[in-house]
Length: 205
Image (tube, rainbow, N blue to C red; front, side):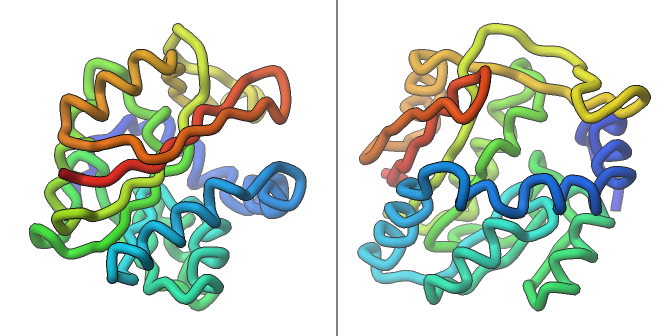
């Protein structure tokens, strides 16, 4: 499969997959997990259970969502990350955020936690259109982004490991969600380090 996402970022995640898993495995222990719990509750309230984890990485969130009795499919552009999901007993698919390999209205929920920040802002509409396409009417989107106003490559994982990051203001995300037919039903922010995380739960109109 040809992946149209940023090749440098995907290659970096292939190279650092194991280290990333070790570094982030306890994220929801160290920081508030209210967004995860609220997302699972909204999906169940909608009467569904199928969830697509968009940009799943090595399956950290996928495991937690599965433990909440959701039927999780992990999707990532990094083949190494997808293989790690499968090692953990999760369903894993290599795929492109810009062209999700699923039929219309397949899922009751989509979880995209700090994954779409690896898309340039000029390209962010495509994955949001795709997420809306594969969600059922009334489907739930859980979205996490990082507050800011810049974008570009950063080597914060180490020299020679560039990743693209796009940071967003709350007003930018509010406008994007409205543009793509999502109604915000939950919002929170927290600051686990130098940057503030903006966390949303939305329902597809």
